[in-house]
Image (cartoon, rainbow, N blue to C red):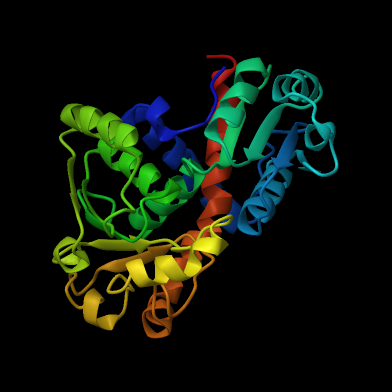
Length: 308
């Protein structure tokens, strides 16, 4: 049995297997062929953080695979009333076939997985957002940017940046990360990524100049500067991130056919301009849709590992 907690836990071949499954299932879905890969299975969906895309994509995805999703808000279950995570894990995992958790601390997710009898999927933590990166890579492939791309991440050193580090270091991409001073990635995650990059020949560089990072790249990506729980830092962050907004001036430094990715929600006028967002809307909303398809690939792959 395998869990999906961070891309660090998977080989390049395993990541590509999941992507291939997602492509296959997406093609079938577009043909209105809903193959019941997970017939009669139940996905428990635990949310300690609110969500739009994560809930809709997982609930729709498990339904299209022949199963059913159970939405479990922390305010509605004993977890929100002080029950230990390990006890919640030992109860819920005896009643469902798979669990998705969207929470704050990565340690909570890992504790749940340690006591779970079924596969556990990271729907987002403050440290990693691996399901989003699977959707992003699927989108890159569809828009012709899957082979040896140069990727520029412009913005905050957060869970998305950490996940880009994991994907690049596993698949062997060139990744340039530009963050303001004081908003860098976690140094321990950087060390992990650089160690894995030695095996994959990935080229990973860190800088504070977004213009240097974006020059000649194939893919540009960012995330909100003010994540959930950081609202009290808003004014300080706006000041620190001056010059980091993805607008047409910055985008003009990338390749002419570069694509722009954003995991959403997007805050126009902060991390991205209205003009740039709308110019790349086709890619951005294809990326949003691919959360559905990438996660179906992940769920089917994890289910297959039970008998491997």
